[in-house]
Length: 145
Image (cartoon, rainbow, N blue to C red):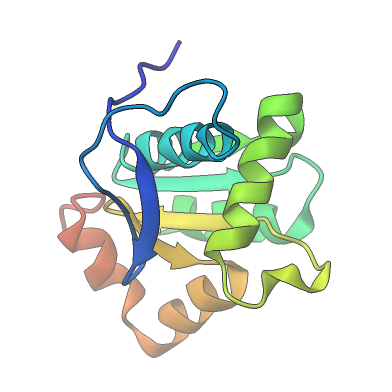
């Protein structure tokens, strides 16, 4: 089971989930639940050099995972549809992190590189095409060559 950090996540700045350094809020506070979910996302996103939040039946998630594997990266993959209620909460938090995802479209895949939010399939593919994905992966320690 994952250990939770004792910092409250309050914002996303420059693609990085940041915290204010404060402790956990009281359980009766209405924002404490969402703060805990953001905290969980931050811990999961920084747990490996590359993290993919995915859904097991999502074709675009499959594309992103195959691309990363083809480049020699072994990402940590979280299949949100297999996590029950926690997966739905994480998916809702990810929807808040991605600009333009509130239109009811698919939220996954969401990719973090070096603990920083890279984005969805469109951003991953754009970085791959323009040649910036491999340097990002090297800087994060996901690729050595």
